Every structure is written in C-alpha cells, then in structure tokens.
Image (cartoon, rainbow, N blue to C red; front, side):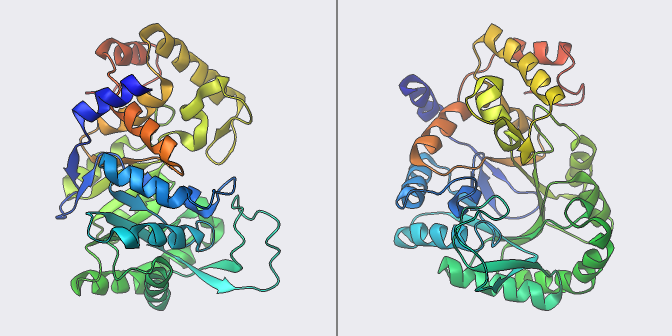
Length: 349
C-alpha cells in the first residue's frame, strides 16, 4: 500500500466543475452513510480521523443525509468539520425525510441497516414546509451555518412504489419552490437529486430544473444504465456525482472477500457474483485491483464530476485515494469490453 500511496500523491486528486454551477468538486469525495453506523458501529474517534485524512489528501467534499443513522451522520460530520472551519470543504446533505422523535424505539436493534441509537423515526415529506424544515434541522445537527448542495433524497418509484405520484406532486408543487428560494437567497449554492434509479431522473428532468444529480450504483462496472441520462444531463448543463461505485461492497472486495457479499443493499445474486468473477479474471491478468477499476471507471465519463464511495475510517480513506490513483493500462479496459462486461458506449479514458 505504501507504494500505491506514493504514486497517488504524485498524481494528486483533480477537480471538476459541477455542471453549470460555480462549484468545483474533487474527483473523489466522501460518502458519509457509515458515519451513521451503517452495518456496524463506528469507533468514537473514527469520524474526526476520517475527515482529517480526507482533507489532508484533497478529498474535501462530504455527502451526508438526515436518514444516515437518523441524524447521527450529520452530527458526527459537523463535529469533525467545525474545528477545521478555516479549511476548504464542500458539504451536501439531503431533504425529503423529516426526523420525528419516537421514545418507543428500541436502540438496541438496528433499523434500516443502521446501528444508531438516535431515537428518531424518518417520515417522508417533499413539501415546501418539509424541505425548509429539513434544511434548517440539518444545519442544527451539523452545527454549521450553511451547506453547499441540497439533494432531494429517494424520490421515485424505487423508494415509494404506488405512492410515488403523490410524493412527486408534493415536490413539484412545493418542494421545488423551497429549493429555488434557498438558492436565490444564497443559503445553498446548488440543488439536485440524490437517488438510486434512472427513471425518476429522466422523469423530473422533464418537469423541473436541477443543478445536479447524485445517482448511486447505476454507473459502475456492473451497471451502466445511466448512459442515456448522462447525455441528457450534458445537454442541459446538469452536473453528475456518481455514488456507490462498489455497488454496496461487491466491487470493493470482489467475490473472494470474507463474509457476506452484498450488491445494491442486499445479498448478491448468483449472476452478479459470476459477473464479478469474470471481471476479477481480467483484473488478475493485468495486475489491477478490482477496487481501483471500480473507482476509476466512472471518472472516465465526461459528465461525471466526482465519484463518491462510502468511507468511515482514516485507513480506508488512504486506501481509497491510493486506488483512485492506481495506474490501469488501456488493454485492461479493452479486455473488459471484448468480454462483454462494459457497454460499447462507456468511455474508459
């Protein structure tokens, strides 16, 4: 790993403008769902150590949400950032869920994948009042005066099923007005979507104006279903942040990792594991870590400003930056495409 870090420090992390905004993001950011004790409890000092490592390596963009640990992620991120107030950093958080106090909750059991003891229950609300209340509550949890980007979290049929039309109407009739007002007043610099599905992005691009889209898990070595959407975003000057490059972990450790193999927030199906094994064979041939390929693949697309993996420790932060700078030969990408593992339209350089 030491040699990898040396190569990364020589190359450094680049920066890219986010669509038509004046925001320049590092090519590698920090997804903070782990700060909310996703899957496991985070050591007490890990948040500050992760933020310190990220800032020192140039990964100064942090994405959080009220939903992550039911407020815990925002609290930990804010606690880590406040003492470093003079250092450049960019923050996005999300709206669409309000956190309601609920004394009946049992903190000893994980909820929605989070091992957080925060006694709050998330309630969807995309209305004008809901967006305004969510933004203000996030500032209180963060203990910060402002965030840079607000993202509408988990709108769409993937999250809401038959209730999607009702929630979309709330957003278009009220929530969008709140987002416009916050940007016009200078309270936020940009607003957009933070989702896991392509269909709702296409639907809303026809209905409302957004500065950016954060889309998780839909442009990876295993799923390139965003290509047509990215073309639309480029035409309209809508920036793209590509989150979930590991598809919930399977592309970080591959099929040979110990413990459960996860894909898209659940157990990986056999056909996905088989596809990963085929990718691993080509990785072995070229001496490329699968995590390096997973991180670097999205950044070859010109529409993407930043790739956003979840990171919850300083060691993982250093490893991720090293993988992002690992030299990958062009024949590796050629072999993936020849094996039918990459779309013919997906750029690799």
